[in-house]
Image (cartoon, rainbow, N blue to C red; front, side, top):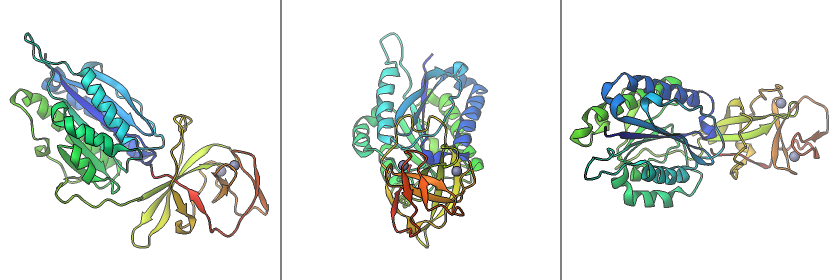
Length: 336
Ligand SMILES: [Zn+2]
Ligand SMILES: [Zn+2]
């Protein structure tokens, strides 16, 4: 039986933390369920998952549907799109069975890239390489979520781009409805040549991107700070979102970070003028409502603004510093 290899490239950068990542996790499960009920898909589709954050990795190698189990996803800093595309290319080249005189090889693979933001590595070079061989190796579809996606560049390597404006779990689940329908129809008609997947019903939340005039992306719509808790010495992620009218960042959530969050290292943080931040988020561990920056180790600590103490001991490096009430300094954030 000829296989139809399907690759899911999933963005697991920190901007996906919380509900979006949960929705993707749930989405892969429902995708599998739907495909398992489709006799064509069950016969031909093989699935592989490649995830990327600071690094790209093959999380699930190409597996037939009946043996596929959805991988557990977790977030890390960074969006290494370039590494993900490079890994995709070598993985496909390794996986793909070529046709011989006796048997036909695999069908041309389908690749779906799900991303919500700005790549943090040098991915343009990789995308140029991929572009040279793209028409040979796979059909590539990009699903961009939110307003930070650079559709101009993604469009250059994709057969089509689809835009999901909203990152709510309900909206995210529509992606997987579309994916299921697209993969199902491809598996049913695969002998007749390429299927135009953009013809699969997109639903209300998804929009086909007109690549002649892609939507303008918003630079740094989200800001992320890794904060260490003074009380528990655990890390959390503080999220701020840009208000485009005022150009100011408003607090938008705090999330406990998984223990392995820094296991691949962290990425260089863009500098942010704290005067652009309106207030801070509350520490999810101890309830402290302020932040304080340690100059010695460049780490942000949560801090009790009601405390009368004149000094603060950094929870990471132990350095004692004086509190500066004037907030005219910059702190390292992350664009994830
Ligand atoms: Zn705390
Ligand atoms: Zn420190």
